[in-house]
Amino acid sequence: MDASLKNHHNLLSKIATNDGHGENSPYFDGWKAYDANPFHPRHNPDGVIQMGLAENQLSFDLIQKWIEANPEASICTPQGVSDFKQTAIFQDYHGLPEFRTAVANFMNHVRGNRVRFDPDRIVMSGGATGAHETLAFCLANPGEAFLVPTPYYPAFDRDLRWRTGVTLLPVVCESSNGFKVTREALETAYEKACLENVKVKGLLVTNPSNPLGTFLDRETLKDVVSFINDKSIHLVCDEIYAGTVTAGDEFVSIAEVVKEVPKCNLDLIHLVYSLSKDMGFPGFRVGIVYSYNDKVVSIARKMSSFGLVSTQTQHMLAAMLSDDKFVKSFISESRTRLASRHEMFTRGLAQVGIGCLESNAGLFFWMDLRRFLKEPTFESEMTFWRIVIDEIKLNVSPGQSFHCSEPGWFRVCFANMDDDTTLIALWRIKTFVRKNRNLEIKTKKQCWQNNQHLRLSSRRLDDILTPHRMSPHSPLASPLVRAHT
Image (cartoon, rainbow, N blue to C red; front, side, top):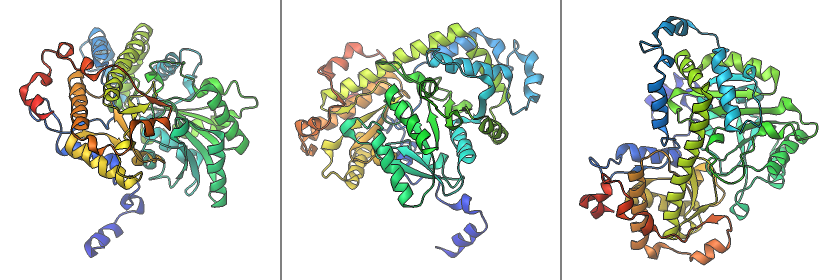
């Protein structure tokens, strides 16, 4: 290490100078590639399209209409300014009572009103990131571990580990059963930790899953609860995508299942929620810790003073989320739009022989590009990912950044762009596949016979991308764009 750099490190703390933030991951490298050359339909039509960001931008018009119809909800309007002083000086880390009540009711609505959340157990945090770190601080000591089924969200390595010193241990899940979490896989990971003298303090599951776009069925959740009860370890259930389930069976919350498992130790059960995905408000930094453990609620609330939600945000959201008619309409319409976009993209991929894991939740899907790899290795995955970034100009996230056990899977986010950009992304993929059929090392039959969970469609991509379906203002109508796609 350079002497000046070493001296610089000596002046700072070990936490500040370690690499625990994880920005050396391909997950973040893709973002950097986008930032260096961002797509714009007119100013930069050859730029990289951002498909590595799980944002829900499909229903902002509904939010805007509500805000326009309810100007008193903001303390920065003539209609709401009378509440400015009271809101601005409020600083109780319990949060505005009306905000906690509204969030609890929204969580009820998202889960079909089959459960009831107690506002007094709602603990605020600066986004789900802060909520996860708070729970890690509450539940584990440095060096102790959480089991996490793979593939899992890359930033968990930052959120739970960086400042807490907690370790994450993978529970290896495989494509042969659709990456389902099994009791066998949980036991294997737990036993491995014991053999390595690592103390396991909890299990973290994301339901619905990021990056898979699937959610755990009731029986799997019961197995998970039985497992953590048997081991006397905590269960942290991240449900930030609960409102994005679009089709199939109803989403089952851990809050439902704990009532059905005999002798469930509720002191071991904790939820993380936020408004970043279901409402599309990542910038508002609204994270929620919900614990059935009274002591954890008390400690987490004290810790929340390091990352509170601003009272201005609480004030507005309390009004919005208390509007039951709006909430019901928003949840329904948002799910419809997400389902339509998901169908549009996965059908388009299927027409050029690209499958994805069967899914019906989240803002993304799990794309199978295994047949494009020269070898079944993560080195080959990275080589092909560079082609996707540099030639197709799409930022999709490679599976290894999600700790996937099998090379060749990629997460594709589909809800952070408009319809025209989606069509351009599909067009780029279609063109690349047709021009590079020699890259397909494995046959479709070889790949898909081994995986019955891939979703394909017989509908023609040309039917989806026909000119009459495009907006008259679509950049695809431009000869320049057609020449480059």
